[in-house]
Length: 297
Image (cartoon, rainbow, N blue to C red):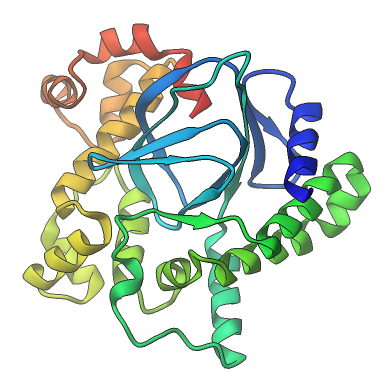
């Protein structure tokens, strides 16, 4: 019943395709009534929950198709391809996009550990290809409904928004993706910290040596552990982050030269070659073909 209530709330507030703000920072509703093929985007730490229809995310060639039985947990910045390949006016997609705040999630993870809920002594928690699907459970569903119900009243939203969002974060950490997320947000996860640094410094030179040094590992150990977490080698990951970010910027109207510089390319011609090699189109052709669709993913 709660999941159907969530769907009705989204339908009543999302009046057009794309994202709709809720008034709660980091929480947005989305609707899609047309099929959008998977295109490159960068998922910052987030949860994507679908209540109607089907959504798809592709990370390093591995497809994740999910609906109202599972939500997507992405606790680290990831270069993915995402789309709504089955959405139509007769089969609309409705869902919620929730950003995961690093500080709040880390504090909760610490509080859980201090309360006696210690993470298992294993390195397996992050070996799930960078993202994980988690079953909708009662705790998550009820917390999400309580959060979205605030949108009907600005005062309720202002006063209770942070507390309800914290309740949802706790439900995520207690759910099927909880160990995965707690490893990612824990202070000891050097790989997640390295990914966060890369995500916020795409315009600067990045080398495996620098990434390994920042993580406190040898180059060989860092390379192995990084690939266990993301399925990609570090340099492949950095290139995918840069090109996916540039593709989003170009589709949003930014010039090719500016987008290239903002993601760390000195040579526009090198950027164009690598862009075409990855996406099969020149950056300018990409802009013409994807300027509308990219904003809905």
